[in-house]
Structures are given as structure tokens and as C-alpha cells.
Image (cartoon, rainbow, N blue to C red; front, side):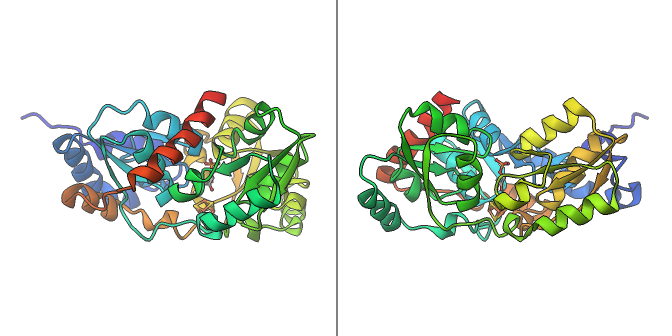
Length: 325
Ligand code: 13P
Ligand code: SF4
């Protein structure tokens, strides 16, 4: 008699340090079903670093920060992309793959930054600052990207702004990312009052208390945090840059000032690092579950469609960013 190893058994090796076997067993049927559905429907799963470990390590094919997901979306050969993340990420994947089917498992996966600005507000900013290019964080809708000169992510914002070679830029919609980048460059940065509802909740006092309670801790903060939080941290970077930092520097003890699942996913690969976990949950990212991903593949839901005129302009903003970075 031959026994076959199930995909869920193979995946468990990656998470054994962070998830008890008895808990993993509750995920196994969905993980195995999703692997079969991916083969059946010629699909790949792109997953953001904020996905829970059973998604990130159990079913994802490509994982990363917003920049990596945008880059990797260009290389996908499968006919269907399931974007385990939020709507703006699925739109970016669709913009870069107009001929492919892109599925978002839950239509409610929005983003407070994407919802913080309208196309008219972008036009008003342009009118108020003639000649200043609009640099738009990817955490925006395709309609906002279409109004922009170039996109950026938290991983390449400084590079993008400096590559423009201008004295002044309009950077939308995250006021904190914009101010954190402004502190690193001589370029004048005009901001819009958007914020990430997850990162704006961290305070300098949180960081001070973590240091007091956990001697020797290295603190890495996401640049969507307010500047006074970033000022208290040892390093600021995108989710992928935080992960690289842990891999490169191997701190004995670390705190990632960002969304909760990030620490779980990085900790899985670093059993020797002590992770302090002061995190905030993103309710939009957490709309993704094994069940919603399974249903997305079973029923072909929810397909992302974009207006062609908006798409062409939005795609140009993303492609310019990818050329620069
Ligand atoms: P990055 O993964 O690009 O750092 O973005 C964080 C984020 O909040 C995405 O929604
Ligand atoms: Fe948006 Fe913040 Fe959630 Fe990222 S973590 S999707 S920026 S609300």
C-alpha cells in the first residue's frame, strides 16, 4: 500500500515552530482542497505578508510586500491569479495582467488609505501646486492611480521621489509615509491627510514600554506609522524590508511595529529570534481566510474588472514606478 503525502503535511514543516500540530489539523482539509483547485483552475495565489500563517505558508505561491507582489504579478504564467490581500493589490495585479482573471476572495477587503482620497481631491492638489508631480502610494484605487504621474510603495518611495529630479512633489494619500520620506530628502513633499487605520494607532509610548519590558529588543517600524513612532524605532521599512532586516541582522529579540500576522510569518522562519508582538490587526486583510480563498477558486469569485480608460492611465503610473525601482 502506498501512502501519499498531503500538501498540508509538507507545508507544516514551515510553521511547526509557531502553530501547534493539533491546530494545523483543523486547516488541513481546506489547504489540500485549495492545492487541488489551483491545479484544476490553472491558478496561483499571490499573498501579502499580512496573511495568516495557514494562508501564507499553507497555500500561497508568491508572497511579499506590495512592491514584490506588483513585480511578481508581471511574471505569472497561470490564467488565474487569486490575490490574498486587499482590493488595491488585486487591482494592481489586474492592471499588470489585463488578459488574466484576477480574483479577490472578499469584496470587503478595502483599505483606509485607498478610501481617504477622491480623484477630484487629486485634481485640486494639482491645481494648488502647479508643476509638482503627483506621487501616489499603491494603496489607492485605480481611479486615483489614473490621476497620478507615478506610483510608489513603502519600499521604494524615497527612490521614486528622488528619481523625479524636481524640487517639490505631491505625495498622496498617506500623510505619515509622506512625512517619514520627507525627513530623508531635500525634496519638498506636499501631503494629504490620509492614514492607515492599523499603523496610526501606534504611539511613541508603545515603543518606550516595549523597550522597558523587553531589554535589548530591536524595534522595526513600518513607515505608515506616525513620524514620532518611527523616531523611537531602530529601523523603518516596508514589510519585506523588515523581513530582510531580521534575516540579515538576526537580532536576538525583535518587535515588528505593524500588522499582527507579519511577526507570525517571519517568526516561522526564525525560531532562534524572540519576537515581541505588539501588533494591530488589519480588518481588511483579515477578510482573507482559507474558506474565502477556497470559495474564490470553486466559484470564480470575485473577479476584478476595471474601466479600460482608467486602466491605461493607472497602468502607466505603476509601470513608471517599476522602471524606476
Ligand atoms: P508593504 O507590504 O508594501 O510594506 O505595505 C504594507 C501595507 O500596509 C499594505 O497594505
Ligand atoms: Fe490599508 Fe493599513 Fe490595512 Fe494596509 S494595513 S490594507 S494600509 S488599512
